[in-house]
Amino acid sequence: MEALAYIRDHFIKSKTFTIENDDILCVGLNGEELQRFPKHIPTAFHSKTSKKPYDLLAIVTCFKYATLPFGEYVTKCRAEKAGMVSTVDKKELIAYLKGDIDTSAQIYSLGSKARENDVTIDSKAASTPEKRTYDEEQAASKVSSPSKRQKTTSEGDKMTPQKSRKSLTDTQELDQVMQGISAKEQTFRNRTNIMNAPTKTFENVLKIVEAVNAEIKERLEKASKASLIAPTTRHEQVPLSVTMRERIKGTPIIVVPAGFSDLFTMYNVKDFLQDGVYVPISQKKEQGLRKDHAFTIAKEYNGEEFVFKVVDSVNRFRDKEWSCVVGVLVSGQTWQFKGWKWAFPLQVFKRVCGIHIHRQGSQLSEEIKKWDVKILMIHPDKRHLDKVAAKEFWRYLFEHIKLRLQ
Image (tube, rainbow, N blue to C red; front, side, top):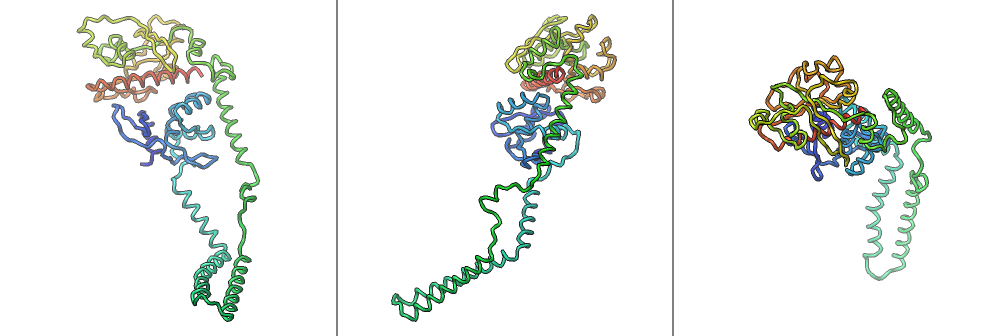
């Protein structure tokens, strides 16, 4: 399967990837390696302007940071030494990778253009009979001329008057042949006209400008609907911690399930979020651990430290606390959201980042499949994979917060 098609199918199934030296590894939900590609392999997705293919590293980097503002995206590309997908191509590429569209005019096989060029060259060759005549005569002259030159030199060192006259005649005939060939030659390119553009209009430039203006207009319309609009001149430069303090009036809150049969509760969620380790609830109870009503946890992200409050009950929440809720660990049962400010789970996930973690081998709830939540998996025995799930939990949560606060 071509690399672009495989990566698209991989992303649609909510699977992740890692970069190892010069390769990109597609990782399954259990952390196992599914496929490996060279990170600089050309893909079938081509630039709309230059017609050149993007390599695989540029594709996955664009998808990874799709929610970032343009300035931060450029910084990430430079830091990871990845090619940058232009603004004109980015929107269509993301739509294709997410599965919103099935194909694109910018996706075509790497050899199709070469075959088109070969056909063009053949047609040009067929339309210039004079050039073929020149090649044939030149080949004939190369075959015949050695024998003529040999005739003047191979019959001994002594040059008689008869031989001199014959040699002079042969040279004159050769000059006449070369003059006839030169008269039929045509100059198609020289160092002056090779710099001329193939077209005299700049309609493609106007199309690029229109596409960029349309994207800027769409971004401004989304920003105008937000409750608080940061100045556009400093929006891309403000750190996330500053934006969160300005937009979230209090400590950000993560809500976890309170059921006895849930995989994560207040008994063991701190070990998972803080150290990336899953400890069964039964083991915690055997140790005599008492459940906390709430606790805070510090997490570092992009060189900044963030503090979150973790609770399992929202019964006493007021509007101030509801505005601080940024994430919820979803159990898969609708009764978990009883007493919430928003009546239905679908309304909750429009405002709050939902993440569901289930044990490998267990059946996924039908409700989870309907909700807009991130699905992570815990292996029953392989504890070294817990850190992978915890890392993905925080990465997705921070990306959701940045998107929400834009």
